[in-house]
Length: 443
Image 1 (cartoon, rainbow, N blue to C red):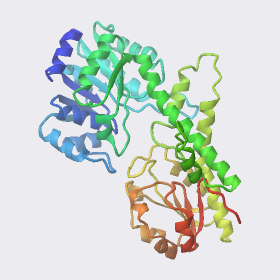
Image 2: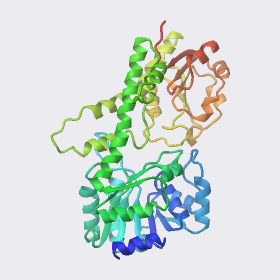
Image 3: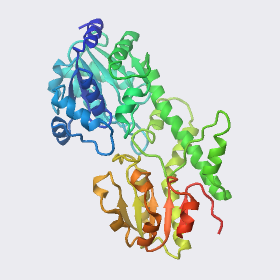
């Protein structure tokens, strides 16, 4: 099948689609293309996930507006089904790959899932099919990893036996469907013609800009945009530490700084989590790993943001000391374990670093999170008898907490806020010993 023939099939919605990986990225993508009228097959190795999808039940927890209803709709309409079997891909015209691409302890990309998907796909790839990588990858990965694997496993040639491009995802838990519809996308193609066909495909589900370019530019854009955020957050966090040391209030400082034209200081906080921001700077840096280029800013930002959960421990120790209590043996309630508010996503959660350090110091840790199954429970019962509470995630449930009730159930009036939920003016009348990121304390 020629690229022009494929383009025509996409226009008529006759192209048969497949999505490899039915996680936070792949599942909503599969659902939206199915809703648009395409026949969509999801490939997922987790059999429990396959069973849930085929029953119309979303495997994604947390608050995802519209996703449960959309999944039920497209499964009932027989527009979407899931399977763990790559053999089912033999009749698919377009395959989107949405698998994880983490980094290891040395910040080197781990492409096991991507390599496995490509190696399994190659032998069953339909002649003339289009492969699109949605996963975020380091610059040069399309040329140096994806293309060689497909050519060797398929024993075919690019732009003759198959076509290849990338359209890096830009979704966020809690806004999966909204982001898919309304956020601009960069579309990379191994040729300009391929990029245009991918634009034509995504136009069926994306209402925002679709900017065609080459694959390496798409790789760079995605990793740069998340690295930008990481560096900006690191700046905000370092300013917060300076404000604490100087006796200032970072939130008042930030408000006034942002009144100046062209300034937009990011939010400081208890750490940066998720699947993107903690790793994408390392993916960007890896694009130059074999060149004589000394990177300074990006690694420094990563260090600052990784240290913030440990800074929360320092704030807690200081507050406990004021209350006459050592952290060793203290019972600490941690409010929130997901990396993002109103989500069940715990990938690279700052709370995990906090909890590990608290246990190393001899504290007993009680964890509550309304969205993470293993940490759900009655909050009022869980807080009773704890020596301190540490807020790590700005879940909606925590915003309406009664401070007086919280204080009455704690053994000690110690409260640490890592996400700017409370102001000192709210907390002081209740009688808490209060610490929060970016606020100096004069004893």
